[in-house]
Length: 339
Image (cartoon, rainbow, N blue to C red):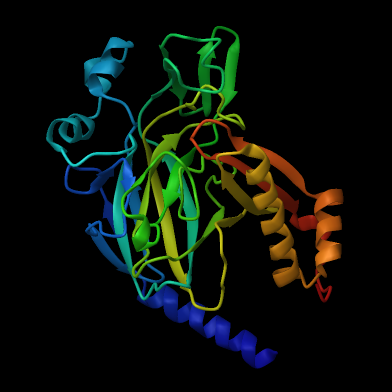
């Protein structure tokens, strides 16, 4: 056991000594507009252990932002450049930075994504619903958009007089290329590649685990949110531009079938499907698999523990595939226990 611990400590030290930090700005040549694709050309090549500072953009047009009340001087020039120059678009609408090629990542590996820091890049966000979109399109058969000011010192959104929302910035979309056979896929529905998960738990200090489907993984990120409610019922959150610092570790020792995450306090399993019932089954089964593999429970015990200690939450209801995640508290597992 002591030899194994020393091995991992030595590996961690070696990784820290050789890793590099890169900055990836959002420009017409560094974004993928609305898709994940195994055939996409990487815009940055890095190695396991490296860190990337991503500058991501709000997903909306400069014209719409200005018409909704954003002063022209507050619309980022990079957003104007991308809307003017990028022609390779779709089928989705998200402006994603990437893809980033991680050397050594091969199909069957796991990509560990450590979300080290997330900062607000602009002093406002928007929330909007559109005609025929959102969870209640029959109740709101018209479009509407609201600009919401962000207080970056107090970390609150000034939604309306007397209403302030605490900010918890996270990236709505973080994912990799799907298997080659899938071709170019829409950036909106989440899936086995992760992508547009809209999981508000994935704030700074959390870790995302992704099963690698293609060589290099081809990681993309965007859809910045200053905050969001579970469900994201009108189809948008507090949509904004974010800067994020993420570290990437290629895990040859970890084999997973589906995206998974970890916060300082919880383990998270996920499920995505066009039917909410099936997405829930997937998320629960993924938690059972996790508990069997990592905590050495029997399947019966894992099922029981998920029922008595896990929280099954709706991640989002509006992205084609519905999202569900299960939160399992770490505190129930006592240190020093064999499990």
